[in-house]
Image (cartoon, rainbow, N blue to C red; front, side, top):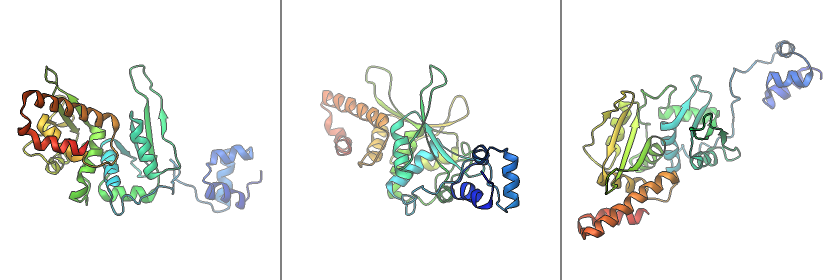
Amino acid sequence: MLLNASMLRSLYVNHRKSIQFIASEAGVSRTCVTNAMKLHGIDRRRRGPVPETEADCSCLDPLTPDGAYLLGVIWSDGNLRQDLREVRVSMADRDVIEYLTQLICPEKSPKEIPARQPTHQTQYQWSSCDRTFISRLVQFGLHPAKSSTLTAPEDVPESLRSHFVRGFIDGDGSWYLGSGGYRTLRLSVVSASQWFMETLRSWLPVEGKNINRHSGGAVWVMEFAEKDAIRIGNWIYSTNHFGMDRKRQKYREGCRLFIDRMLERADCSKWSRVMTEFTRAN
């Protein structure tokens, strides 16, 4: 294969092939390819993933319920490279990763990362290198190494905050049933950023919840007992928009146990409003 300007521009610039790929196809060394590129005035790309152009940013501009949910997931489990060239989300729940892929890059497939240890779970990963998409995330406030310096995204209207919180809980929240005979529904939300937790607390439809540092000292935690947990669940699940199935089902299980217990006590009037909201949301 002749390393002329036309061939190099076609493979390297137009088709985004790597120098290693071109060298293998031409049967020459990488040095030969780089020297030929210098001779023909073809600038090299920076190292790292090849920038993509297929990401659909329509859910972020203007912001939609799906876009707010996407921000919530990225704010919890997302990772932005230091050079701002790639953003990725990894988690064990495939349904969320498939949803993000269909929302932003429908022609791609989620990446499966096999478990390295028998006790670990298989992880699924979604990523994008689209510069326009990443630039929009940065405008909302995303930055590399965000864990302890995270702040709430800017310009999320009040009408869309429940969708953002649903996405964040799908990443860094946990619905669970307390120990003991009643097995009451609980919600725990964690973050390494106290600033973010302060804003998140102000967004929630409940008041007066303390933000506590976890015993290990690395993260901040908000925990909600049954009444507040149900009100938050009614708020984030009040529409038919997507949410992680595993966590939604755990929330529903806790609500059903609560309703059964209230029926047994014949105390339905006290909780009629909460039960009505639950029925409407589920």
